[in-house]
Image 1 (cartoon, one colour):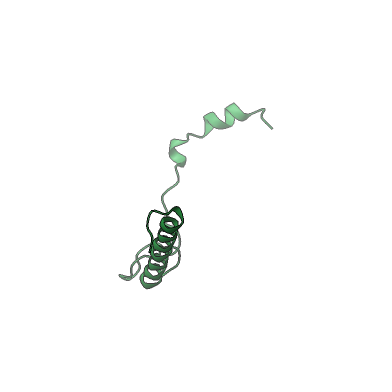
Image 2: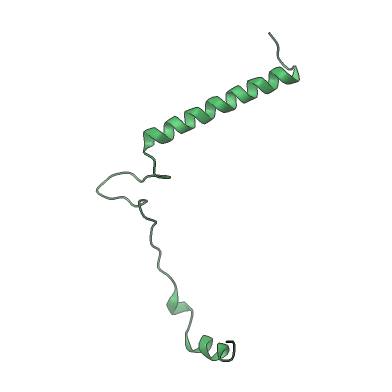
Length: 72
């Protein structure tokens, strides 16, 4: 298996075999449409971000209440 390894490597220069960059499917601009991140439209991403923001706010408020830093 490793008998002719040095001969195979010296026969093929690595510089000529560099891979060309190819964008992932669905990430390139096509006909002026924006890219899709994680397969979602901009509106869907916005809703996800708002939901995450609200979750962080609620968890932070509950943490402050439990630790006694704020009270009603």
